[in-house]
Length: 419
Image (cartoon, rainbow, N blue to C red; front, side, top):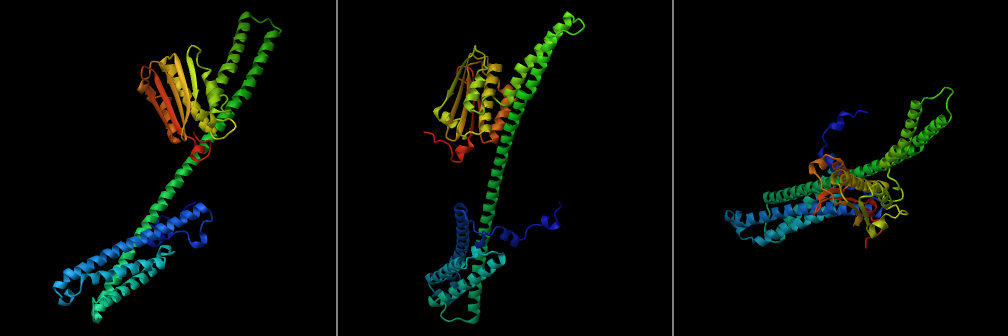
């Protein structure tokens, strides 16, 4: 589908203004949260408009009063007798009138740029008239001539209109910033939702493949092994040589090894054992694969035990899988590079974060090798969900791998409180 030429044209001032007008009354949101947000937007628009117009018109009034009292008075003798307080009073009343008129006319709620312009014109006329009236009352001018009256009305009206324009521009800028911030926040939420969906899909695919390996492929291998066993028991019509018998036996043993070890190992890599029960049982199952010559200790904090309750859904499967992957990476690094005699795995909760720690007393690590390994990729994956991964050397030897990542349920205000 192609877009027409009009879709690429820059927006006009009127279009940009209309795009950032607050929600009209007929479309006010019905939810309490949305209604409060809408009301706050309207209040911010009104405050920005009135403040901008008030400051600009006030500065003009102050400058005009000082200029008339201390500069023009040296050239016009009639102006020298007018006190500066009288001039300040007249201009101050005009500023107040302008701000009140903008508020009463609800310029911040005008639906179109034309409506804004008309209301600003009315407010500016009112401010100019009040200024002239106050100048008459305070004695700035005792007798008006047509030229002076026209000049004062025009100058007051122009100053008020310029102040309105500045206030409206400030209001529109605030709206644009607000709309942009909300669009960015909405996009960030969409990204998080997409990431969560991808994680859920990854877990589903892993489980499906693991179940397929465990059931379909493994059962097929069982059938093949059974067939070979039957063949070995029932010799064929022709005599079978000893070498053929040995080859068949080796083939049968190889298939059995594939079934018992390779398929099961691949299944565990895709979807760790007992992950559906909880993170802690899956880590325990993982630690059973560590050689018995290495002392292993698992420390699970009480807050984590409560959070990882199998009957709850506070920890999602992607979050459990991520924690197990951290433990796998820590064990892999320790066994490949450290040659340790002891390992300690810690599972803790820190606020709304899960903390996974793997420590060993081995020979340490080479930062250059680690940077190029799966640890860096695991760190990138943690960063996508707002977490981090730190690999540091322990005092006295060994390494410490620690991961922190947020739990969606805890950030949403669900889950057990941490005492």
